[in-house]
Image (cartoon, rainbow, N blue to C red):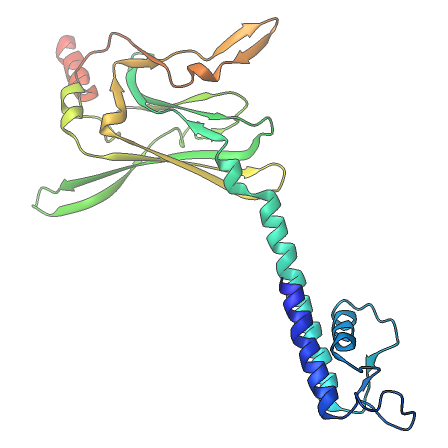
Amino acid sequence: MCYIVTWVAFAEIYFLDAWLRDDVAHVHDPEWRPCFENVDGFLAALLLSVESQRTIGYGSRMVTANCMEGVVLIMAQSIVGSIIDALMVGCMFVKISRPQKRAQTLIFSKHCVISERDEQLCLLFRIGDLRESHMVDAKIRAKLIKSRQTKEGEFIPLEQSEINLGYDTGGDRLFLVEPQTITHIINESSPFWDIGAMALKRERFEIIVILEGIVEASGMTCQARTSYTEDEILWGHRFESCMSLEKGAFRVDYSAFDKTFEVQTSALSAKEKSEGKVQELF
């Protein structure tokens, strides 16, 4: 439609100018010096417009140097045609690459779980990539959004706290060849340090998880996001395994991607457990 509208619009201008200059009535006059040569009607003006913008140039009709406005019109149509070409190429490239469609193939587990791993209380969730082509330089990060009141009585709405997913050890850089369980160790620097199973039910917060990477096919940056509220965190649960070894190769079962099962986990917070161990030592 962009091309057709510009062709018709400039054709109308060409035909109007040719009619005002009386070029239409002197098409077959050899002594007449026309501005628009061989333009005897609107259809001929439309052909002149198409040939000028698409640089076809059959040679039977053209803009001559006998008028200044004809040269200006040719320059204007050439610039408009170049702009439309650039926009069309950009739109087609974005439409074909569609990084937002790539983000839809990156899936997150429906719940977070809190359980012990290597004798440490951890917050865990899963991510997976449904495509065979891998993302390049994938990184993951998480933010805790929670309102709090300072010791001085100042109320801070929606304060953002960083959740360490392994950026100090390189664990936040992922290679998504299989579903991975992202682990946040609840230690002294964790915002969940003093939250236990009972306190978790009274809390009001949201965890924002952001996965960024480069699409291998197009080289464009892709971002996928999800969030977990306090109701979507399961205390004392663990994810079921979704990978099995079959005939010397691993098979991924995405039907078990969101499945969890209960495990024996203390209801105490990581801080209370740490203080209990210290008291046992003394």
